[in-house]
Image 1 (cartoon, rainbow, N blue to C red):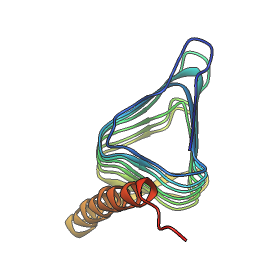
Image 2 (cartoon, rainbow, N blue to C red):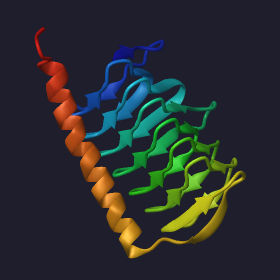
Image 3 (cartoon, rainbow, N blue to C red):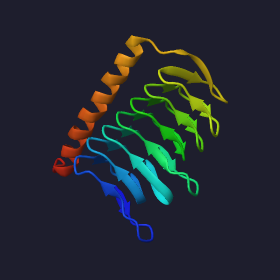
Length: 176
């Protein structure tokens, strides 16, 4: 894990956050409690702020960045799948961002919504709460079921728990 300042800005990371080896966080980035940034993810706050809430998982190989005067905001309880790209967007509480998806400038992902794997959310698109969006460009497919929303909670909890386990393992690696 690499934490770097950018100009006068330093990342602000809650002590409970798991930052995997190989991840990079730089500049004007804030990450809230019990969040996790997994292997080879990059979060650069060198153009505008990035604010990441509590219990957010940024999974392996994800890239988070911004455009001038357009911060990136990720609210609490968000799951970001492997290889996702988020750029100057807003992701509301409890959303799930699928693997390999791309969310572009000024898009807003509604509370408890799901962006399907591989979807591309174009600039400025507003996704309603509790809906599934798919495709490139993304289109609203349907409302999410209660079972799907409960699965989001399971996934989120598993990443909070895994983050604690991995954090402890990296603090006390096995000796060889």
